[in-house]
Length: 105
Image (cartoon, rainbow, N blue to C red; front, top):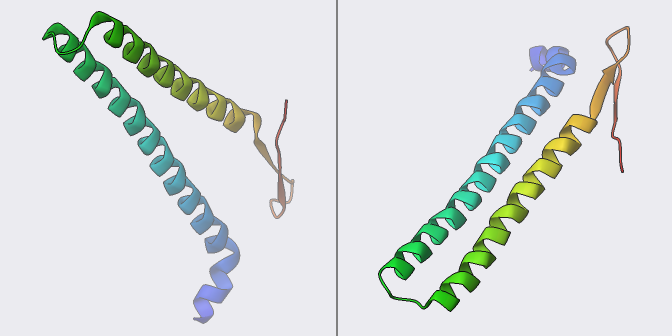
């Protein structure tokens, strides 16, 4: 208990960084899964059209919807990556204090 209290100034921020990294990984994985699921739907739609299960008009309408959904997801991912790049953390010379600056458009 005493050891945990003495090392908290170091272990606390490290634990927070680990937690943040896990959250980012989980979110990135779920977003990639979402894009992959839409791509699978697009493939299933193509197969249904090739087998004659749906008309060409229905195929084109559904294909456009899925392609727009994929494009929107990719743009959202790019915007989030850009936000991460624009957010920078500065640490003072003594190494004890830090602050973050986020650039907003």
